[in-house]
Length: 373
Image (cartoon, rainbow, N blue to C red; front, side, top):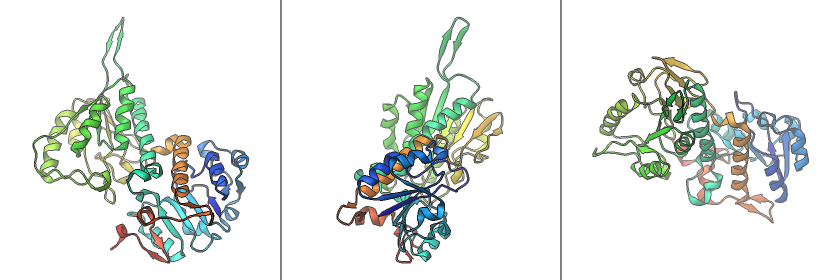
């Protein structure tokens, strides 16, 4: 069983899909691991560190030659897989809803694409969930970046020269990233509030010491989707929420938006008119900017200023913490494959529940039900 890991080639991608830690773990299962030269440098992992862990470090073509499984953070182009075994697995993030052509190319080439974004949100798959592990870091980084852009302190400070008031931070969207953003802002001493379309998140917000901001007594709320993901809201709820947010956002110093709906553009949460009500010097961090953005006017990897408010967002927020993001991503991949490892066959054999959920292509066809039609 040969497992290959290529250097990431997507623009701005600093993470890597394997670490010396997981190289050793795969070797203990009986697998041979090959890593492309320089694959880990942007995540502070040297080629020598991989060699010491037992990996073969080779040029690109030699890395994938004879590979049974290829691991990636972002799925490589099919051309990069030349030399891999027919039917080889590729476990990575594919962004399948937006990258249909890539998925079709994998099917045509006969590779089995395993989309880590499609990992089901069930208890036994929690340790395999790359969206959660990367979102956790993204929520943390969003607050640190906002704090850096904000021209004032976060905590209340009582000094001989007078008192500095605590910054007011509002988190919109209380998934994994939002919860980490709340916790990070609280640790920095801010006064934190948060909102979400799912009423069940109120207790989570309160448990972190933040104030929940929710629309009350509005019929037709449809925020709770399958698998713990949010879905689109009813029109009545959208209107009521917009009015509530407008009055609340005008009082905030920092706003962190995290709302995403799988397979759809990011919902718009903050309009230009709402930005105009905020104080000069306020900061908005749009965690969904790569999927179209929650904030009107936000642009990936740019700081945009509107009405005296800075709007920031990264196309790859977790990648700004490359070493930790890589470590968590690599463990997710190992946990996924090792959970199905057959010692006699010296390879993983996926079950139906998880295997069918993540498998995009097989036998020359696109087979995932979520991509049907």
